[in-house]
Image (cartoon, rainbow, N blue to C red):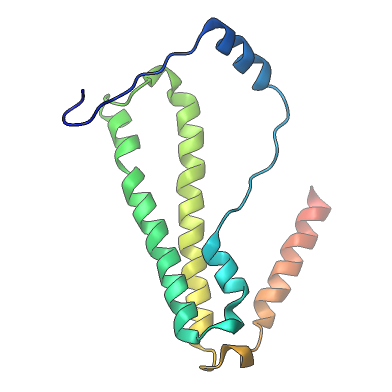
Length: 147
């Protein structure tokens, strides 16, 4: 027991370690985006401007909440209290990805909200942000060329 909660501790077997050692160097699939709110944005013309703005506000709130919830993890390691300190080099890599991901989602929600605020109440009558479209094309083209 830990406080009022039961805690289960798992250990890996020798066979499991061998399987893990065989799996780690194999190529993996890319990230999978499962983001219901993004689908709601994709189909925003079937709702109202208020619906879309509420969805974007919820996206931002989710990101802020997740980033705040994770703040204790790196602080615990800085304080010398984090679990598995021998794994810290790899945990820092994953932690940085998660921090940057949540900041990206928050930034996108802020940007999208600024765009949508300027739209007419009937979102089906909204005009695309040509500057953003041109930037997306330029970034994709330049990245493909430079990679």
